[in-house]
Image (cartoon, rainbow, N blue to C red; front, side, top):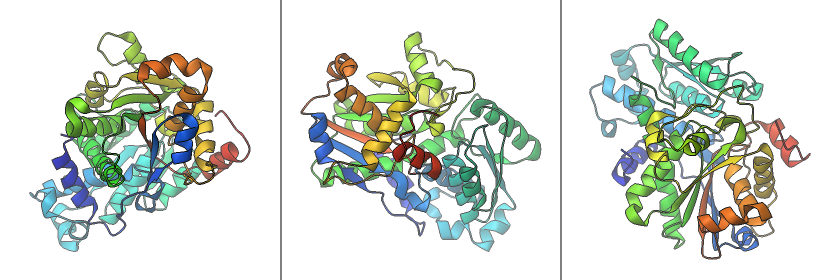
Length: 381
């Protein structure tokens, strides 16, 4: 499902969008030296389609596949231009796409629906930044902030969509709902394929370590699945990073019974895009078996990551990274610089020969939060 051949097909579709261009891979040589590592590479998704986050890759591909199948065609037979034509609109009729989001997925879905001249209705959990709501609405979607946490909001949106015959495009799965989440995972492989080619272009043919953020797990599962498919038994070491307040994969790993475990409550964390308490079951099957380590991080870890990337060592490229985007660099800083990270550092095998890949999954999608953290030293929600 996540092979290089699939990724090539997915990228070919994404490349039919006028806004498509590969996002940059920042090579932070001075930060690597500071950490005592050989390479620190950061894929900067703040440039993705002008939407400041990677999530649009999943939503746009899932919508494209849905429309192509409605037409009885393969995704290889359609393009952005063909899917937004009046002929296609007449053939498929009026469609409303619905979802729940902390911000980035909903904006990506709203943008995709707008590209193809369809409607989108988006729900957000309590505590969502109104700026993210307005960004979603700017693409013509209806959007409201609920009084529910993320997982309960997902259930409410699904029930509402079922009653109204809308198409749910959600980046998590449950019993009876797996096809579209799997398409979303495939959509993310464009990012992984770009990163692989960019690393190979600078003779970093294989990273030794890949640090991945986990919310529901779709993104981490897609990245891990792709790199496992490409490298097989020589695959990198994978480390999963989550917020302490929503660490469902960490909790599942600690349970050590092979089953996914949810965490409950408000899931309140600075890392809003990772505030998910229930693992995606499709991702769990991948993320249960292949990561070497699971990290549960306090908010100050992400805050430090934002500042490290936003105010780089002289000579390194600046990466404007939001709370969720910077979580992995924050963790890397902790494990390489703090005394309490020493034992984990040795077990994970991070040393002067290590080539580490991180993905900054979002830019400053909440500008006020970004300034509060980077300019004024905020550490927590």
